[in-house]
Every structure is written in structure tokens, then in C-alpha cells.
Amino acid sequence: MTTLEATADNAASAEGEAEPEARILDHAYDGIREYDNPLPGWWKALFWGSIVFAIGYGTYYHVVRWGSTKEQVYVAGLAEYDGKREQREAAEAASTSEESLAASAADPAVLEKGSAIFASRCASCHEKEGQGVIGPNLTDAYQLHGSTRMDLLKTVRSGVPGTAMIAWSEQMSAPDLVAVTAFVVTMRHKNVKGKEPQGRKVERFKKDM
Image (cartoon, rainbow, N blue to C red):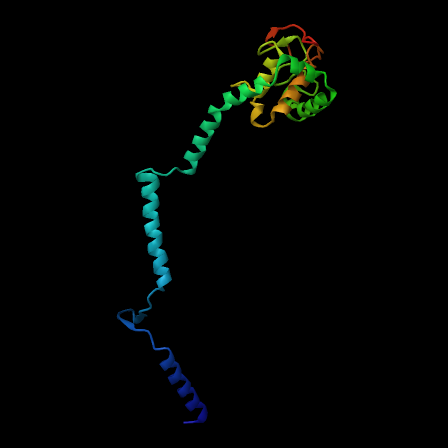
């Protein structure tokens, strides 16, 4: 035996002693034998833990129904929000009046803000000058909902169910609602040629209340 072969045999023997060969199982398939290599303990723990968690999760949420799903939490939150809408609107209405809206309609700073809001939020339905396209003409002597400045504010704030007029209170703050309403107030009786009159004829808004 050469020195090189002896060295290789010694290395193989040392390796065999350091890492004993795994036990070979008794069965064989097409001459193929299988080693008995058990899974690591952490893998088994994770596997059984996931089964226990799944059973507990299913029992908690779907059997005894102690917990609420994300959908149920959302529905409950939305219902609570809608339930308090009337309270919020009443609180806003208490701080706003025909007199305050008339004053806002005469305030250049408020009108500038309202004009910008109208251009970005309302012009798509009422056109730039308020002559109407999807929504009604805001410049004639007719009003679909009510007849006062406060009626206009209510329409802007709460919307009109079944129409393209959404409740802007969902997207705008109370000062913004007042500003855009004040701007719409100034459009009355400008009579820009556009959509035919809708609603009932109303009086011109008084400058001073």
C-alpha cells in the first residue's frame, strides 16, 4: 500500500468515527435503501404548534365566535360612525347660521378658499361657472333642496342619496364646507346659460340677515 492510499484510508476511518453512518431502514424499493434521518426538533415543534394554533384560531373565531374578524370590525366601526353622523351634523349646524353664512359670503378670503374648493371638487358636476351639467344649474333662481343658505350647506354636507351628490362631510372639514357653500351662495341669480331650471323658484338671498 502506498503512502497516499494509507493516508486516504486513515482519513476515511477518522471520518467514519467522527460521524457514524445513519441507521439504514429495513425496507428497500427497487434496490434503494432509506436512511433513518429524523426531522430536527425545532421543525417538529413548529409543525405541531401550527396545528394547535389553527385549531385554537378556528374555535375562537368560527366555533364559539368570541373574536371578531377584520370585516366584522370594519362593519361595526362603520355603523358606529354613521350612527354619530347626526350628532356631528347637529353640532356643526349649531355653530353655523344664515347670518354667519351671509357674512362668509361677503368675506373675500372665505370666497377665495371656496372658489378653489369648488373648482377642484364641484366643477366636474356643476361646471366652472356653476351652470350645471350632471348637477343642477347653481346660478339661476331655482333650488332643488330647500330655499336657504343653510339648506345649501346641508346639501353640500350630507349629499343627496341616489344622486351623484355625495356627502362632502366625509372628505372636507367644517370650515371648508362653509367656504364652498358661501361661494355657491354668491352664484345665485348670476343666470349663466346652462342646464334648465330644476326645483322650485326661490327668492334672492338677502345680503344682510
